[in-house]
Structure formats: C-alpha cells, structure tokens
Length: 299
Image (cartoon, rainbow, N blue to C red; front, side, top):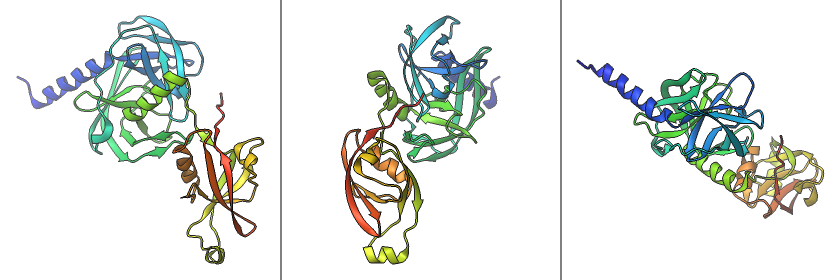
C-alpha cells in the first residue's frame, strides 16, 4: 500500500533519474570532478570555475569516457561551454520566470560514485544582478540546497522535473546560486558563435563619492558621482582625456551614483560605440566623448 510519503519518494526518484540521463561528469581540475548538463546534442554547459586545465574529459551517463573541446568560457557569469561527439538529448527545460521563493529545487549532478541529488527550496528570488566579475545574470536565484564538492555545474530542476538552471558555488561565498536558463541560453549562443563574450569598459578605477551640497546647489546637480582613482594606460578613458580626480556624473544621460550604475550603462551598449560622459573637474561640469573598449580577457 502506497502512502503519500512513498508516492513523493517515488516521484522525486523519477525526476532525478530522468534529469540525470542528461547530466555528465566533467573532469577538468585536480582531484575533484564537477558536473555538466547536456544543453543541446553535442553541447555541455558547466560551471566555468571548475575548468582548470585545457584537457577536459567527460564521463557520459553510461560510463563511456570521451574528450571534450572548450567552445568558450565566460568567467563573469561562471559559464563554460564544451563540445563533445555525442547525441545525448538534453533534459526538459523550464523557464525561471514563474519561480517563487519556497518552490522545491533539486540539484542533480554526477560524480565518480554516480548520480548525486540534493533537495531544498528556492530561498530567494530577485531581479537582474551583476556578479563580482561584472557579468549580468537576469534573475537572482539563491538556493537553500547543499552542493557537494562535485556539484557545481549540476542541473537544478523544479518539482515537475523541468531544469531551470545550473548550480554553482562560484558566484557566492555563502550560498548556492542557480544560474537561470535564460542567462545560460544567451551566454551559450554567444560562446558558440564567437567563442567569447565582448564586454565594454572604460579602463578606469572608480569609487562612489558624495558631492558637497554647496557645489550641487551652485551647479544644479541632482545626484552624486564616482571619482576616478586610476586610469589604464592606452585605455578608452585615457584616450578620451579622463584624469585621476575627475568625478563622473552621467554616461549618455544615465546618472552614475555607484560603480554598478556604470556597468549597467555600459552593458546596454556595444563595444566600439561612442558615448558622452558628463563629469566634474575643477569645480566645473564638463562633457567629453569616449569610445567603449572591450574589456581585456584575463587567463
């Protein structure tokens, strides 16, 4: 006789089994493997911080070991895309738009001992946010789910078995994060077509700074700004004539009250675009023109 608890148990086990058929072992760092999800036939998505050398080996669900080629990496969103010679089908996907705090979340990975699964809830749902490396994630999805050492890159599924993201421990020091499917899709598309994500930058070190009330009144300013602490040699800012001590007020009309505002304003434009910066220098408001450069990629 089945009880409600045994039915729930069977349902969860069935979800894990279905999703795990599209989850692989990724061996790309010393001692500890990670997980990866078949995002499309021949395409695997995993957490970028787990890729620590160029030779990547994949263990498929049936135990077959094959080589993978790195198609592209984006440290800013902690997403890496691998190509493999395999026709394994992806899991069923679910969009993150309907997620609510309190929804059940299952992390389904694969390690040396086989399938790993943990269950918890979505603890926080928020809007778009920027990672500490400047990547834009379209929804903040914090998980109250334990991640084992090899679980970064694991599939995160809802109570119906729909995969709404991949799990990572690389974007927060305090909790597991699900990178939403919508963000993964955008990054995968660009990495497969271009091999990289081109992000704009000015080449300046910035810090928020308050503007004295008397200066605001005199110059009719409505907000504060960000002060230039450093200027990279030969960068876009230096070419535009920006100097240490300048206070940036606006970028194309967008107020710049903190560094996140600068990233947001740059993120809405393309590398190479011309922009207008309004700044405070020597007690006067000035306007300068600059061209957005591409943020250098670091190894």
